[in-house]
Length: 118
Image (cartoon, rainbow, N blue to C red):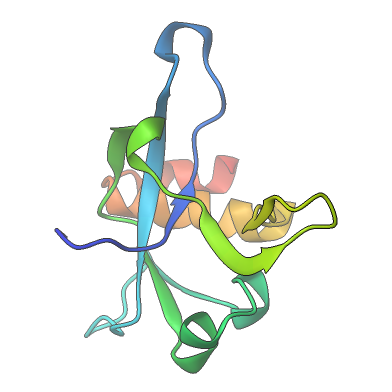
């Protein structure tokens, strides 16, 4: 994947990895065939902006990236808060959804035997 796209950050802050995050990309193209490392992400989990609500988004658990946080752009909501500052989408996925994401990643990394521990 080479174009700009939304991602789900799956790594926590770590002392020795300042500024780095591990992400899983999202795509609007449905994988064919859908496999255990793919996941349809609910539109309710995404920003309530037109282009995120038009097509389904698929998590590609076999395409992990570790990137510098400075290379990521927060999703702008196109509004400004009462203080005049831009508003960004910063919602977090729930525990159940993140457990599904981690399972997809385990399958994508060829470690399905670890799925039962997530």
